[in-house]
Image (tube, rainbow, N blue to C red; front, side, top):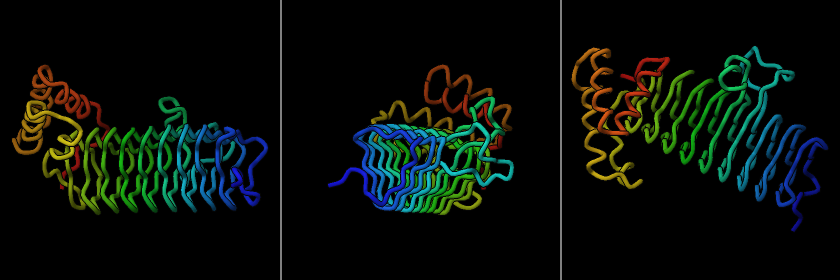
Length: 264
């Protein structure tokens, strides 16, 4: 079987490891670098500057690395898309390169980590940062500058407003609409999304012990059920974080936010 299908168009300035496979009618532009054992299916468009790590799979009709839809973006700007290893990018996914709006902090990059499953029709806009081991169900869309932590699961048709964050191990139900941040370990549902509970089942599957989950649940109650003002919540979380690394993560996440917490 041919490694590079004869109908594929590959720019002379693209860099492909000798093990890369490219399917029929795919287009790989200048400034694209693809690591070993990647599989690029038919009818894929890869636009540079773009770096794809090792063992990624990109399915038909995906567009990765295209110029952002932000009106300020131009081809001449030193922006890019950086994708790690072992990601699965399914049909009709669009992932767009960064902009100059956060160049000082993100170097104009849209960044995706390792071992992520991005299902059909998902959209990841400019300057987004996605961690590792996440699952984006079908039709999930991220606006610009969104940050997604490790082990996050986003239900189908989840929509996330610009500059929002979802912390590690967070979970959104189907058709959730987020206009605020979701702290680590928290499950949200609805549009606008509201916090429902700790992602307890997900934590158990990842090896969290009951004694680790208990303080997370106490922190959740403090944040969402105590009725205390946020200044009090932050102060108490900081104290609780001294005896739980997971609560410390929640505390730091809330303290560093640009947007309020997601509340229905």
